[in-house]
Length: 147
Image 1 (tube, rainbow, N blue to C red):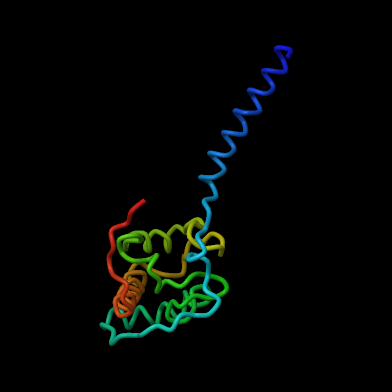
Image 2: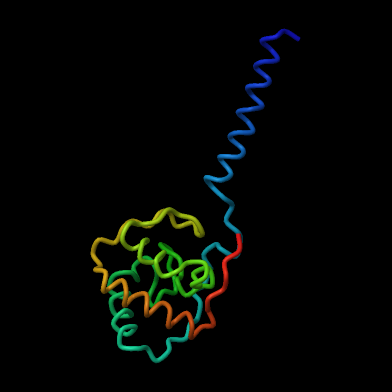
């Protein structure tokens, strides 16, 4: 085999390995359990604290278009009353940052979430109270995240 033929094979192998490694990390597989449910989950709405009740109203007015009424999900966005959003995996700051700056798609196939410029920091805090209190009422608690 000519020297140039060996070089082409080596370059091709390096490119294939690089694309495999970097392409895999850029678009990790989405587990079947993380694909949007075909039916909306039935959730319990607890007796909410005043802050959470305010958050529920703000959420349903500003976030429900994508995340569904009471965060049960829709064809545009994931349910937030879901174990993947337990505080050990998505802490409060992750919600705050997602609302303020947006977030790339990573658990669901809905695309990137854009920044929500129409909500204030205080509104985000009350929305988060609503989400956390509703999660707890539905058995979703802190679980240490394992990679």
